[in-house]
Amino acid sequence: MPANNDKPERISEAEHAVMEALWQRSPLTASEVCDEVCDTREWSLATVKTLLSRLVSKQAVSTKPDGRRFLYSPLLERTEYTGSESRRLVDRLFGGRAAPLFAQLAEAEALTEDDLSEMEALLRELRK
Amino acid sequence: MPANNDKPERISEAEHAVMEALWQRSPLTASEVCDEVCDTREWSLATVKTLLSRLVSKQAVSTKPDGRRFLYSPLLERTEYTGSESRRLVDRLFGGRAAPLFAQLAEAEALTEDDLSEMEALLRELRK
DNA sequence: GCATTCAGTTTACAAGTGTAGTCATTACGC
DNA sequence: GCGTAATGACTACACTTGTAAACTGAATGC
Image 1 (cartoon, rainbow over the protein chains, first blue to last red):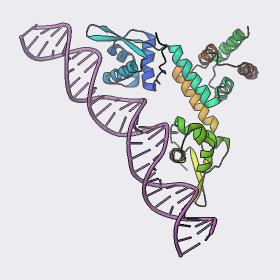
Image 2 (image 1 turned 90 degrees about the vertical axis):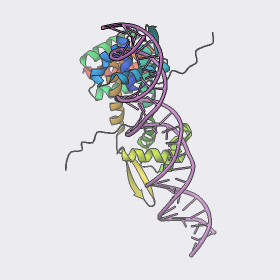
Image 3 (image 1 turned 180 degrees about the horizontal axis):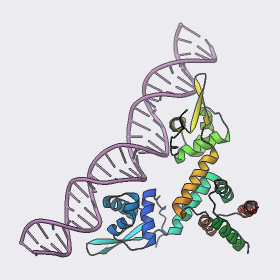
Image 4 (image 1 turned 135 degrees about the horizontal axis):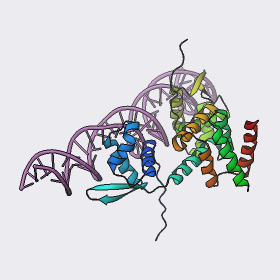
């Protein structure tokens, strides 16, 4: 079997909202996805259908036929996505260095007490 | 004078590259900006000119006439930009919490030794 | 059996983006 | 003085994204 050398296609912000619903619970039908996201985003079912098919063609979501309809499941894993998005940002804004990002968030007071202690724990862990 | 209630317009990735050049050194002429970025991005001068005028209309860059040409300077500050981009990402991917982002980067082995010690120092600083 | 309904597919369309060519003006070299 | 080079302005055009309506085929109720 030849290697899968597809470059993973970029997922837009609206598409990401749909992925979040599927990461939460899957498989879901299109209407079920709409139940999860249409209220908050003020989308119509048609919009969700469009986003789902774009995600399918980007191979981020798989479909399994279930009678006349489809059940949608994520193919792309959440950590894969958050990982690559995070790396993209760090690369683009901070030359690949994470520390300045951290400094930035600290300056913007975007770090909660919980963040601080979790990060301390994480650092201790990494030091072990 | 009425308050400036413009919502800051979003800066695209290509535009960001131009901003980086201006943050590095300014004011610059369009050709000077091109000198800085056209090689790496494989852009023509025309592309840079377009990006510059889009940045001007987005009020991220100011112009000062200098004879027949313009000198461009950043209006948007780098920390403003990196701050809001970072916050956007953290909000979108991690519900506003920074700790999971770092866990993510740690898992992806995107943290260098330097990052770790700088972050430790920063944490100590924040704890003071 | 036939109408209604429901699902996916196709088409639409404006705004933003990446990338650049053409146009018009003006200054400078000779 | 006049051609040429440089510069900003205007125009172009394909692709992505957000948002959704119209279309089509199948299942289901009666």
